[in-house]
Amino acid sequence: MVTDILDWLQSLPPLAVIAVAGLLVLGECTLGLGLIVPGESSLLVAATTVNGPGRFVALWAVVTVCAILGDAIGYTIGRRYGPRLRETRLIRRYGAVLWDRAAATLQRRGPLAVFFIRFLPAVRALGPAAAGSAGLPLPRFLPAAALGAASWSALHVGIGAALGSAARQFEKTFTLGGYVIVGLLAVVLLLLGIRTLRARTKSDDGLLDLPDPIRE
Image (cartoon, rainbow, N blue to C red; front, side, top):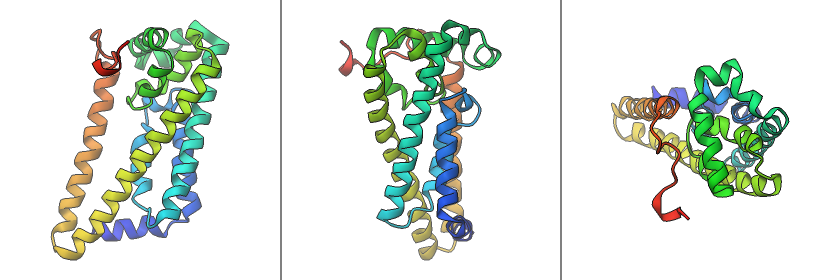
């Protein structure tokens, strides 16, 4: 069963799979799409089609470029419209608290916060615009955003590729292995969804505090 699903994904045009994953990641940080459809979930699914180093590098490169471009667009929007973004219907409905926390953390931590925000679901969707609105200079924002995007995409492409490979190997060995892997994949996606929801609704002051080892 799992092999059939993965084979179907594998049969799709590689460029189409990579393009869709890249576009979803691109949209995540531009207009807040990530508050509704987290880009990492689509990236994990797309990464299950990785069957060699070439496919890995292609997916990683495209997703990294799209993530950087999305961050740059989000930053430009925040720089251009500033505090007015905070009052838009989308931000007020889904991420007003996250916006305020992101802006405060970016002002205190600068590029370090830009890097780590890339790994925080939901907050990631608002971070670039909040950085632009907070007045963080582009020369400080862009290198940190690029490093965060490259690291984040490599991590998730690697996880997705490993899950896809494990599913195929497991099903070859055990008759019920496919069902087990389906369950594991479902649990992974469920945990990602729960983490996104918690990050979206959590309101305590420590939400965006950086870990102790990197505090100033």
